[in-house]
Length: 238
Image (tube, rainbow, N blue to C red):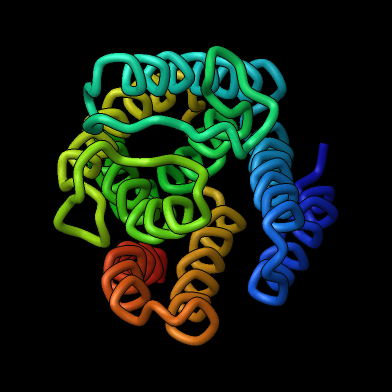
């Protein structure tokens, strides 16, 4: 398989992202949000299969999807490791109350962030930078999804109504999950395509919140978070 095949799902991802700020219909936003995640997942999966081989890529995808589903189910049941939250049922379909697209998103951005980490340094550095890059993405994601009504927090947290424990949970989960993915990942250079994909998310999310969503504080904080990881990867890659 060639990485060029990833252009098809990426085109769907890009066009859908552009379309989200242009509609205010809740039903349309729900299926567009799901389509973004599915297209993101397929883009990363195609690139990963092309570079890692089918067995390793499918193994990594299966592990991340199952592991993060378990973490999300644990989180909604016990409040650990993110804090107390619940899915509202707006995102369908669900399994055990957890939207199916959520574990797909963990895989898509997790592997993307891990590959970005490989541009920075050693395998250990890659896992740490990857977990930070994954957590930085949620500086955009959680405020947007909570405002859309996809999940609710039990307490009014310090960052846009989101408790800071959420980001500690993301970092912890990212470190553990990406450490296992790193074991599955074959030796070899990092993916330039996934570095570009992480950059795309950083730029598009920052523009979205600064210009279209009317939440400049989120655009600033998230832009600094993902932007720092992006800049580090590009400087090291050069």
